[in-house]
Image 1 (cartoon, rainbow, N blue to C red):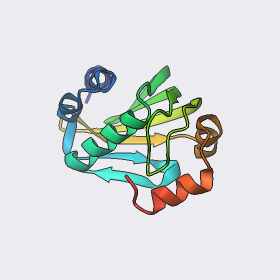
Image 2 (spheres, rainbow, N blue to C red):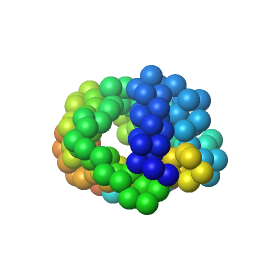
Image 3 (tube, rainbow, N blue to C red):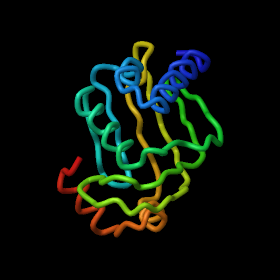
Image 4 (cartoon, rainbow, N blue to C red):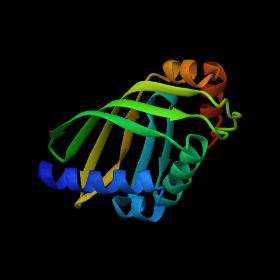
Length: 149
């Protein structure tokens, strides 16, 4: 895909995320899509699992969103980087809400296939997330490792 084509799909995806319009989010993804939080070893695969992961993530952090820093392109891959900001207003991975907000560096690697995003691979520092959101890092890692979604 060309960089312009990847950017157009990514922008549709981000607009759907901002609107919390999960069916439209899924329209930008392949059937075998994934959502991966690399620092937590947390990965959702397929549209049903990914939909649940997006719903729970945005329920826990209703104002969650990136603060764009830039975008780079490779062969069928887009890399968005900047910061991620949110406030923990609901439970996530079985952990209770803290009401605290965070801003952390974020890198999102987005591979493309057949004109759609194949998924999102999110790279952030889990310790920084926990420091800002008021979470215990060991409890968060244990919840993620235990398969909590």
